[in-house]
Image (tube, rainbow, N blue to C red; front, top):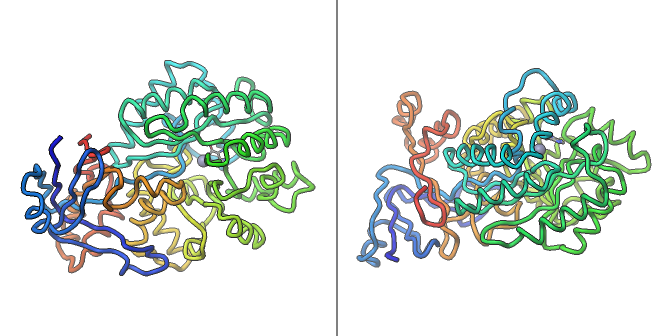
Amino acid sequence: MVDKLLLGQVLRFEGDPFVDGPGAARHDARGGVLVRAGRIAAVGTADDLRRAHPDAKPVDHGQGLILPGFIDAHAHYPQTAIIASWGKRLIDWLNTYTFPEETRFDDPAYAAEIATRYFDLVLANGTTTVASYCTIHPESVDAYFEEARRRGLRALAGKTCMDRNAPDGLRDSAQTAYDDSKALLDKWHGLDRLSYVITPRFSPTSTPGQLAALGALWSEYPDCLMQTHLSEQNDEIAWVRSLFPEARDYLDTYEAHGLLGENGVYGHAIHLEPREIDRLREVGAALVHCPTSNSFIGSGLFDMGLAGSRIRVGLATDTGGGSSFSMLRTMAAAYEIGQLRGRALHPAELIWLATEGSARALRIDSHVGRLAPGLEADLVVLDLASTPAIAQRAARADTIWEALFPTIMMGDDRAIAATYLAGARH
Ligand code: GUN
Ligand code: ZN
């Protein structure tokens, strides 16, 4: 197949902006990305790439900004149809809206319908990889992976295990959680671009026996990720304390059952004790910040200082607790939460979190998340003047950061000029 040369503005990172500052980014006002057989073959200035690759087919995106596709490190695709449900905090929100909806995923046709709708929405928002929770039903996992595979997406997911404090029809057991998860893992993990993630929902909905069964499964497949929720809301933390009186803290309920490790991915992690932070850093676990969810459900303000403190941090929508499918909207919410904590996140940090930061959190950074030779060509092209309000602000910009920040703060799916999956335009 002939090489493709995408032309436009190009922004890439040669370091971690949380460690190295915004200078970790390189901007080419007229740059290019050479795509060969689904991968990035070269990145540079348009002139250099054209000269070196005269036979490549140019695709000119003009002033469009070429970035790695966005990576949503924590989402619940089964909650697509109940996004933006009014008036509840976490536990009531789960019981009132989420659990009744998730009960419907025993129907494979419904699961397939929502999986299709979900991937339409995330791709329209420039998201090329998602790590999702499914429901307790194996059918919900099959529907997700079948749809992701059909579209050629790199995708991660797992059966969400619960054997207590959930309604009839939405509980498995320690044994079926283990058996179903193992069967799904054997079926999907490593197939094409898919990865299985061992997924206990959170400590309140798993008995110690179920947590231990999933810990045992993880020890059999230590290269798999394990995802769960951690310290999202104060009522939830008090509930965990009453359910696990012997635990030192929330994190300990996972550690005591073999569910803490360097391939662990912990969503929210807002109200952490100093011991929990030290332990997460010590084992090399990853955290995922879900800012639209944290304000929507009223959970609290994540400490982004953790990102610069040798803890991997990804960024995520947490749909449908999160109120948007857009990683641009999610970056804006992260900025706002940073401001409320006295730390203005730089646009370089926001873009990095939504791409390489999430890729590192999910341990897929050798495949996606960066514009670098050898990586898979999952790309998004942003229109930095997608609405009159954004265009008039960007017109005043003197730097790429000033040109980009209005799109981060005010942009949505209208800012997505093009999306590429493994080099193919979506
Ligand atoms: N904690 C346990 N389950 C969920 C969920 O579905 N969404 C959010 N935001 N938090 C959770
Ligand atoms: Zn979640």
